[in-house]
Image 1 (cartoon, rainbow, N blue to C red):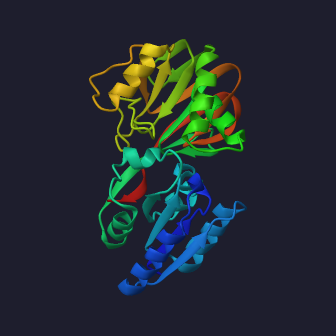
Image 2: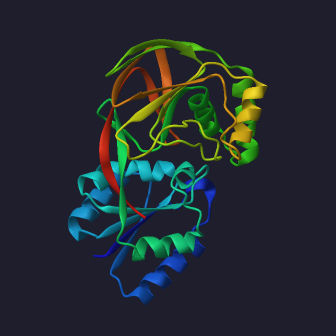
Image 3: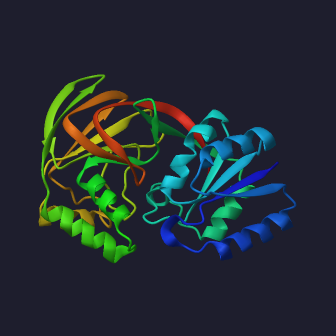
Length: 289
């Protein structure tokens, strides 16, 4: 089989029917063999694994949000398969990171026609979770958790939880041991970065690349209104620097926390942890360009 199209029908609360009609029409005209798989929220990773074993597709194209792509990283890596990504989630940080600025239809056509790939690093956390783009402990993880619990969606709901978290920022202490140095730090957020930018386009990690064999911790020591303003301006001009950030680079590291804290990975809250062991899996994902 040539193409397996994996679709999350509920990601980002976006109706995907029109896009799927386009995809079916385009694939029919291309005379390629293909299959659609719609996620159900139950055992989707196992279902994809079974499809990969049964059909051995040449490419897998994932339609959904960052969390949808993250969910399937393990089988996609293990099968060393070419992967495309159609961003139809909420924040779509990966779309910003990989400059997926074409229309969704043009992206699909490019992924189907292209035979060029870029190998991207993946981060392994505690040998049980994979991170492709950004993760964090602290303010943003709390924000994501509260947003997920809210029955409402959209930017207004996100802004409500953003300001609630911002007004109640609390610092916490942690220890980072890398393969080079040890650090004792305190901050309101500890970001774990393979990529550079939030879905809003605001750069968090100014030195990282997704295929350089390194990852970055970004320690957000404190935050006030001027930091938020600089962060917003940095979307348009990266010469604006947020002073309360510290970047630590590593290939392997351990983070120890004095009390359990929430971890979010690629937009999905995982669980509370007191210790994280992180290492780079170099050039593990074959991404179509």
